Structure formats: C-alpha cells, structure tokens
Length: 173
Image (cartoon, rainbow, N blue to C red; front, side, top):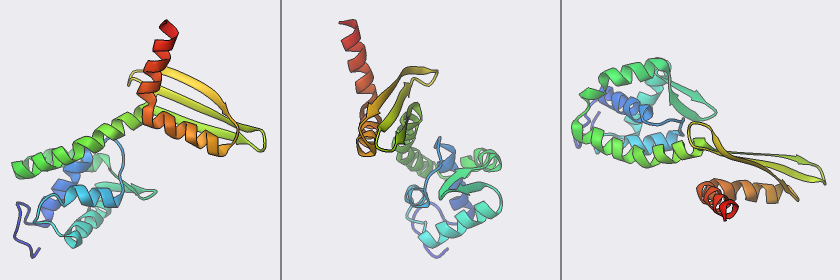
C-alpha cells in the first residue's frame, strides 16, 4: 500500500474491515456498495480494496452469487475473531455507515411481494408483511396488467407499515 493517510495501513486490516462490514449486514450486497462502505478510511485505495476482495473470495471467506457478496461461515468466524484488531475509530465509522443499510435490509426482509400474470386476463399480486415472528398481514389483489401489478408491489414495499396501520384503523372503526 502506498497511501499512509488514515488508520488502515495494510491489506490484512482492509480484509478485516471487509469482513467486519459484511458481518453486520443481513443480506448480500453489490461490490459497489461494499466498496463505498469499506473506503470509509483515507488509507484505503480502490485497487487495494479490489485485491483484498479477490483474496477473500479465493480463500473462501466471501461468496459471490448473482453479483452479490456475502460472508461464508468461515468468513463470519474469522471476521468475529479478528475485528477487535481494527482501530476503534474505523470500527465506529464502519458501524455507523452500515446501520442505515442494515435497517433497510431488515425491513426489506419483512416485506414480501410477488405477482403472476395471465396473458390478457390480468395479474394476481400477493403482498405480505411480517413482524419478524410471523405474518401480520397477507393479501392477494387482482391487477389489470403487469404494469399495474408492478406499481402495486412498489407501493406496498414503500409503505407497507402505513398500509397495515390504515387497514387496522379502518377495520376497528
């Protein structure tokens, strides 16, 4: 590494940081998101980041499927063991930068949507919201076409909690 700025100064620390970040996320992420989260320290270049990711994949710490990067059990175990070696300030920055993404991924995991379209007859749209223990609402709607079905799915994903609350409010009045 040629850059001496920041708290991260070698490839091992970059690898530990990558594992630290991935351990905090419940779902796989793209390489661009991983790069953005990892380069939270001025000592990390994109070239070094790319090399480290390649080595972590080669060594079985990271799995790539459909362009999404996630930890393997080996990566999770080694990440947990080594993350205390990261400078505290870097851990804090990485923890803060992953918190919004983690919250969005957790929310996304609670919302399920799907659609099945029958040519010229319309589409059946299935929507559900879970509280993490079980489904709290599930419904099937009919849409006139795929475009309307996609809009229903999108609207539900954006405001599932509000829809649930409004539905409960309407039912108890």
